[in-house]
Image (cartoon, rainbow, N blue to C red; front, side):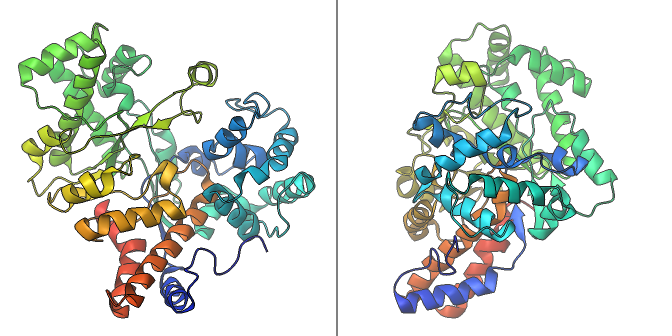
Length: 463
């Protein structure tokens, strides 16, 4: 077997027994995936995934960044290619380097997929590469492995994609028009039209105007177009926005100051400080709009994007060369919170790549402001150890009910059940330790296990 039935549970026998009992209460609950990067087109077209390399290697930056760090070229992995010319070769490269993932969450997720979905029980290696490739390829050609069938097999109740305001959302419309009863909804990710450093920023704003039928050359027209774009998303079931800013900085400029700044960034004359000020103002504007339309606001700051310039220039955005950075929340969020922090209708979920902020900044903020909730460990920290550090750091101040359950944040569709299984096991283990420490009664632990798995995410994302 590739995975042990007691994996990730506490080693101490009495604590492990409680954790296992809690896990049995929640292991079969539906998956709610409110934030991820799967493609709506997969479910609209419902075509077979082409091959194992296209499914497991190409879309997963957790995989290819590790391989690249050990000297495997992105060209050999055919990253960024619309079609993989030699998928078996790419797979063999991956398999021969699989040992690199020992002890990582990626290994845990992949082994879960290999065993639970494809029935493979011998470890992936150079020796077993072709066996894996042939077994997976054959199963991908069967009806049971079509995207819609897998969605139902995974017991997904809600799956949210992440989409640009410039996206036509035709795939989402096609899914809804098909009569299929799945709930796949878009998430409004406006980076391309609120970040002056985004490639083609001015052109993107012009295109936004074209999609919404408005004049985006003025500040008022620009804001009106953003509101119209949000409404287009809401009509297709969207309940949340997502903001991937370099920092959590917010601002609250006067209308005249904002108008002047908008003209400056639109003509390309803003220096980095002014660009940052514009992004900061737009977080506050997005909060204002969320008060109007009820969309939950997610803020994902602290990633230095495209750190490896050579990789960025050759392969584009989102190719695994993003690095965490220290992030301030207390002072950065203050303008937004001064304006709207006490509004009962606002809901803001904060994420971090700076773990030092959990107990010092994020938990105290969420433990006070009614509008703030804490997102789960994200990206580099959605690991067993990262989940424990999160619970230990924030529970003492923010409790459990100022958190929002788990989201998988993945481009790798088949890893969704694996990631949620890890989160359920780790939360049950954490609760079991509180029970054995006599800090929590068992009936309370059962209620919390359900809340952390299912209830809190439904409530936080208005699902």
